Amino acid sequence: MEPMTRLLILEDDAGLRASLRMVLEDEGYEVVEAENAEHGLELVGDRGGVDLMLVDLMLRGMDGFSFIQRARPQTEAPIVVVSARDGIEDIVAALEAGADDYVTKPFLVDEVKARLRALLRRPSMAGSRAAQTEVFVLDAQDGPLVFDRGAAVLSRGDTPIHLTNTEFRLLSALVDHAGLVLDRTALLEHVWERGFFGDDRIVDVHVRRLRKKLETDPGSPKILVTVRGLGYRLDTR
Figure (cartoon, rainbow, N blue to C red):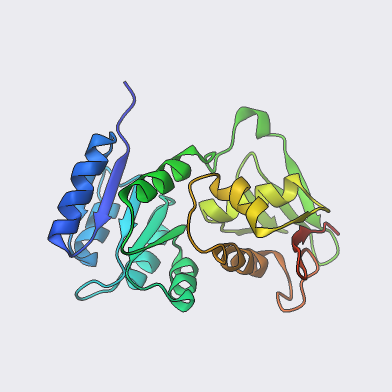
C-alpha cells in the first residue's frame, strides 16, 4: 500500500486548523498541524518530512514569509499560501519567498482541495523514464544554458540553477511550445491545470522569477520574452 501524503497545516487559528484537518483527512491526507512557524520548521525537518504545506502568512512570532524562506531550502514540497492578505504585493512576496500557489481568505474548501490535487498531479522534478533523454540548450551565446528535463536540472556551464516545482513545470511548458506565444490562460492550463481559480497575475510573478534564472540581463530578456498584449514566448539562442 502506498504511503499517505503528509500535509502540514501551518495556521494559528485553531478553529480553521481543525476544520481543514477534518476535511483533508477525509480526502486521504495524513495531516500534521502547527500553530507557529517554529513548530512548522521542526515538522518540515523531522525524519518523516512533509509532502505538501498549507501556510498562513499572519502568524504570531515568525511570519509566514520567513517560514517559507527558511523551509524552502530544506524541501521541494509544494507550498500553498492561505491568507487574508490579498494584495498583489503580498502574492509577489510569497511567491518570491518560494511558495507555489496562493489562496485568499475567505475561501471555498473545494478550491483548496483542487489546488492540492493539481500540485500532486504535476510530474515530479525527477521526470519520467520517457523524459530522461530530453536535454534542451536554451542559450549558446552567453555560456551554455542547458535544461535537462529528465534530471530536472537547469545549469549554465557547470553551475546548477535551482528551480522550484512550479518553475520546472513552467519551463517545461515553455520548452514544449518554444517559439510560440502562450498567454496567461494557456500557461495556467499547462502549469496549474484546472486547479487554479485565483488571480492570473500569478503567472507574471512566476515568469519574472524564472526569467531571473534564465537571463544574463533579466531587464532586457532574450530567452523568455514578453509579446506585449499577447503573452510570453521562449526563444532559444
